Image (tube, rainbow, N blue to C red; front, side):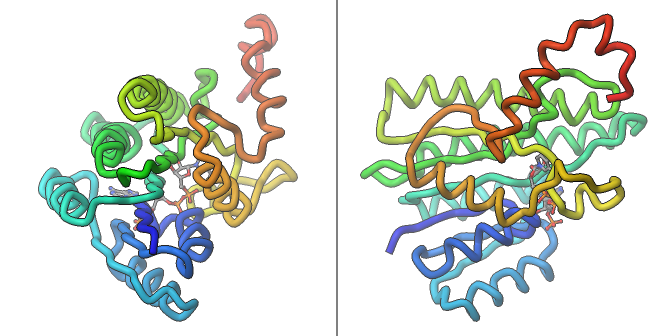
Length: 242
Ligand SMILES: NC(=O)c1ccc[n+]([C@@H]2O[C@H](COP(=O)([O-])OP(=O)(O)OC[C@H]3O[C@@H](n4cnc5c(N)ncnc54)[C@H](OP(=O)(O)O)[C@@H]3O)[C@@H](O)[C@H]2O)c1
């Protein structure tokens, strides 16, 4: 049976991904909240996933990151790897709060992306990391969150470049979802632009199965929206409340 690792399995999107993967893969799951992680594991087992291992980890702790690294190195040989953790940064937070956000949104995803590329199966494998459309243009409403996602995308494109020369059977992709109905957006007014986490999870899995590298929007029609947002001239853009 193939091995798949889901870092951030407790996220709304991660939980849906686990449902899609659990019957066909030996699963390695992580989350920060151990009670939530245990319920994701139990749900996977009820659905027929007999081979599920898990580890709770908080990315703001260096010991947590070290122990996750040791655990992943011990397992190794993954066919598919997904990285999902993320927090919506408060624009007015303190330095130490921003530092913690940086570890969750940028440093840990980059670090584990580099590690997992080395731990993918010798027959090849796919790494899919979740970024965001928020990284495409700096906007006043989510400057720090967007800039971390933008930096994450840049790092992953560099990693894709490196793997292309070193190990062409490994694909490195970064998903850029638009608005998703999840605890992260619980306080936002909902609109037709919101997608369900299940749809995003299906998009992540499809990309991994195709072994296609590079950035992609989820759903794909966000490409058109971001085309407009990116090209909006400053004399219009700077007057918006985006
Ligand atoms: N919702 C959206 O509109 C949207 C749009 C574009 C991109 N995204 C991205 O999609 C991904 C999944 O988010 P979601 O919408 O499914 O939100 P979510 O349900 O709020 O998930 C957030 C995830 O981040 C984990 N996390 C938070 N702080 C952590 C820490 N210190 N250490 C380790 N893990 C930590 C949470 O773990 P616990 O639950 O175990 O605490 C959870 O797994 C994120 O990368 C997010 O940036 C979301």
